[in-house]
Image 1: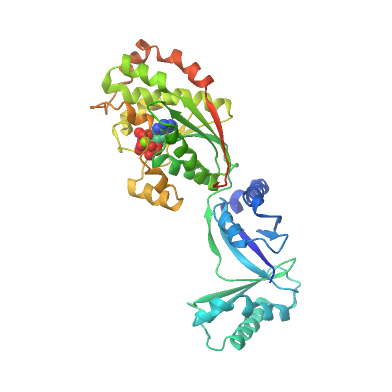
Image 2: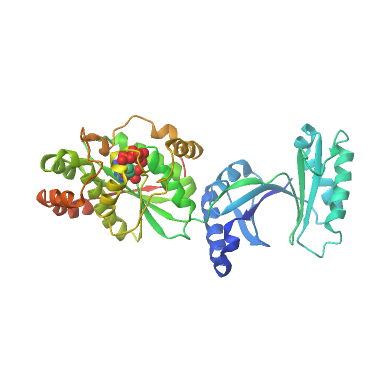
Length: 394
Ligand code: ATP
Ligand code: MG
């Protein structure tokens, strides 16, 4: 039986005149994420995007898995294409296509949608006839229009008639690429991959920036970040990761700055460098995984001090979330198990015993000046290493 995937769009529909642009981007994103699975036609008609496999050996489970992670989709359904666009063909296909589900169910109902108004039967007639055909094929069933175990959907569209079960929930959000470009400061921790996912969900195309301090941080710590980004990329699409050499700056901070300001100064230096790297990659904002009050560097005062180092807006999508809420999302996007692998991060190599939770910007800036840290920024920016992160897990 020939099958396709029918996709319903989300907030895109609200975008008025920009709708076309959003839809085109969504189609492009869908094509890109399933390209390696075979040949497909992806087209939009009547507020639905159809993904049509071009050969019969394509595994639609894999395609659905990919589609379920594309932002901009509210629901999607794997559907059978009726061999002909006739009522007879619908009545033959419906009981057969969903026979497994119907066999296990006690009750069902049929919902019909006729977007091709030239089709000679109206929706209530289609429902009645299809319901009768299903009852003939599965006589143990009864109809329950209020709370059925299985809902059989019949869609009569311009090109064909389709049968499917309950639509599945899509990833929501808006298509990546319609919300501009921003750089995620990514560590190997739990929070930053979740922050990346959340901004991609709002349509932002990501670039990743990671600070490494070899030999204090290992090659394996960096590989862990690559592994995390590959998971995120399943939702956000491909991206570049820039690894910034941070050892010399961290050593200079340790040698020349007051210990209680280590962390805040390090974070400010990260912002200054990240902003420079981001700007040359067409990014207009930075993203971090900070959450208010989680650690000493995430108090309101510390965040104000960190922000003062950057001129770009800094997005902190986790700012009001509890750790458990963040962890729940990290499970959902499958980054949790990787995040808790025990590799060191540059943030944890020189942590002061008593970090300032209320740093005063003036003192912090003075300490930075005395240590001549700004003169080291160029060097770090000019020596970033780029790694291409693709959506495949290999
Ligand atoms: P995470 O779980 O994301 O590591 P965290 O709760 O451990 O966050 P911090 O270590 O204070 O918090 O880091 C705060 C944020 O700073 C991170 O969410 C991330 O955006 C950024 N960050 C921390 N370490 C690095 C790094 N090595 N490279 C790039 N960004 C970093
Ligand atoms: Mg961390």
